[in-house]
Image (tube, rainbow over all chains, first blue to last red; front, side):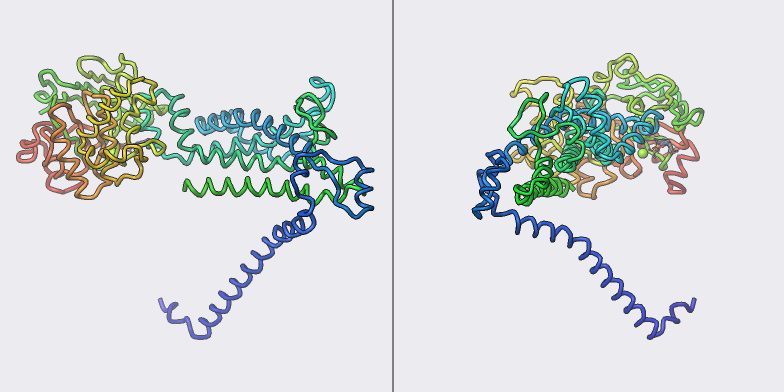
Length: 294
Length: 260
Ligand SMILES: Nc1ncnc2c1ncn2[C@@H]1O[C@H](COP(=O)(O)OP(=O)(O)O)[C@@H](O)[C@H]1O
Ligand SMILES: [Mg+2]
């Protein structure tokens, strides 16, 4: 009752001091959080921008001798990473073609049967899958695809390992998105006699479309930079390959190869810059979509 | 008091011994029997939680959307048992309007009106579609307000306009009966009175069954009234008679504001 009266002047100033300290701490920690990304982007741009040109996108990498010659003449390394760009696009598209339908359908199933044992099991497995190290997924795709199906390293095997990585994110975002749609919208459609599967396909999915898209884009940006599983599956290729049964390059694989070749090591910066640009763009686009629909 | 209201000549809807339970043995609607008059506004009144919505939603078999809801008794719509009808036919005959306006957020005003056709994959010629949209929007006095913005999303409209759009969506199917569950409880007084006027006009062509939490609304626009209490239909008759001379003590107490 006299607690309020007890707030003396000293007490008050101690409070404002605490308040200020706390605000300062928050600001400091936020700066620490954002500084890595700022430093990374700065470093990549500073070291990589000179290599970025049309050639960098439409040509394949030079051999190590050409690179050495250019280096010793003090010139830019010729060629580009077209094989990596096409390989990444090929495998990401294929992984999406596999993961999106499976993930969306699983997400719908979880949304429709929230309490069922099978749904709970599926949800747990999906969560566990999210935590499986990506190299293990590469091993699995190696055993499932590389050995028995394509009898050798292949883009297909790479895509399968990437699609398993994407899957849990799509499952989760589909379920969460559908849960956010008001029940009243569903009932409006049911009251018009719309059969249940059409309610899902023609009302719930379009209504939650931007949420689904956000989840998919985030899933893609997650797999864009994956390297470890691709080493065991797609392997890499020095030429542009669009045959899904053949070994294929990818941007992160090239970065790894450049890193291991003293003559090509300069290319890691421009390649990373490009990859980082793609990931950031996807992230920003999905944020925009998510914000627009709120 | 039940006997005379149970047997109306040529009712649009006959409710017989209707009971609905959300969990086994625990009935939210208990053994309700009543005949609903054609081309009239019938109000369902009663304190909140007495089973009004539950009864209304039994009429278009909305409860089938959820598991474990038990429905007993029979509902005869236009002489046919509703359980014998395909769902789409029943829901075309019994249009429903909800407490909160719920236009489809991804659809334009135009597409919201014909959503019943569109979502069910019922094809109409462009001319027929235009006619249905114009007629339905005129019926709810929304046409003049939106005829130049038909392509805009329905969710851009004001709350009252959205609710009229939802009524138009139900009317587009040319239903026998329109079921409304407290359609004005989320609206301001001006929008409310527009909808009330509209319902009185609509009864020329449709039969209207409306749940209302608001007894003065029932007094203003309904021809017949039901009073429900704890899942039971306590009293049912002409609105005028019920308001001037309630037969049941509980009705009287409700109407004089003793509870509810
Ligand atoms: N989905 C539901 N699950 C379980 N009980 C419900 C559900 N909906 C309503 N009830 C219960 O049924 C009774 C009647 O509810 P309702 O028909 O919504 O009443 P009213 O519309 O008259 O306010 C209430 O006791 C309510 O708690
Ligand atoms: Mg209710």
